[in-house]
Image (cartoon, rainbow, N blue to C red; front, top):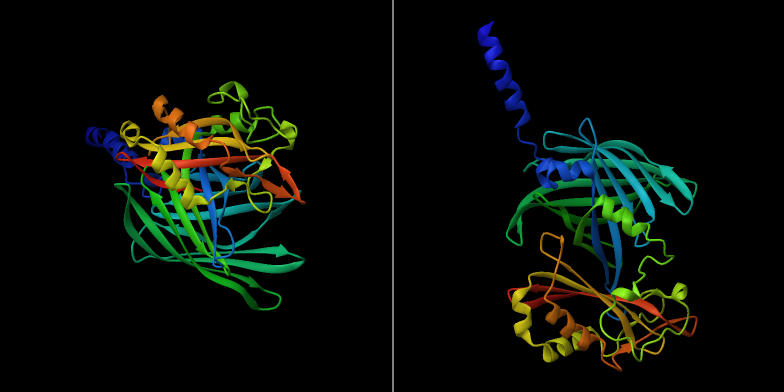
Length: 367
């Protein structure tokens, strides 16, 4: 009896520290249980060179519940819920138990026939299949994980999952579309990026920020009608010479019109303009992503700038004020911007620009 009592605590200690391949690919359990939200830039890159690339903001919420259950919620740029799923994990496998999608004011629950959506093991595949009603006909979505690869993301270990995917119309017994896709998960962080091939282009999502779920709810309920609202009390520099053409509630997003609100000479000219004007020594004291949000007025003037900085762990941080002011001065220069056009009318529009800065250089401009 004494031997049994001696071994019992060791047994529970060993159970508590068994490897959990699924959980290792998300933030620490305390953060996971409290809930966190990832902010992604979601790019559409058309095959047609005459069409413009477009970028949207999407949010995904994650929370670890009891009994090895994970809830994942999807939101658009306006923080509106677009769908949610409940998962459970077992060893290295992740299963979808139930899923709901929102189309307008309608909520649809899908019928899951096979739920193994992801398998964290080499030479092992996952197979997911769901049925749903669309335009009064039965449709089916299939996602087949056929390979998992080890990878590194900015020096951090991760896994890349490769998929075959398809949509089918079951009533017509036909495949409407099939395509390739991949997803990259980083250990201790979660879903870092994903890519899908469509019929006329590509979709690519990349992680920009990771925040506690309480911070997400705070942003979603800021009391203003517009999600992209910029507090004028926090704007950079002088607003002299900048004025809105309409009211604050009438400001649209930069991609709402045709053409989009944009840097007049185009993105390559914008990057060259910044690199020519900026004292590069100011970059050496910052590692991460520096995002400027601002308004492009109907007169093509940029104003109401605010800056937000994130490190490469996707957490908020501080940037050198001298760097922020220098970039603000470059971006707010006169005559640089073209307003968006909606129904032949020039409109005020919210815009944003993210600079990825590493080892004293700007390595990428988004979107």
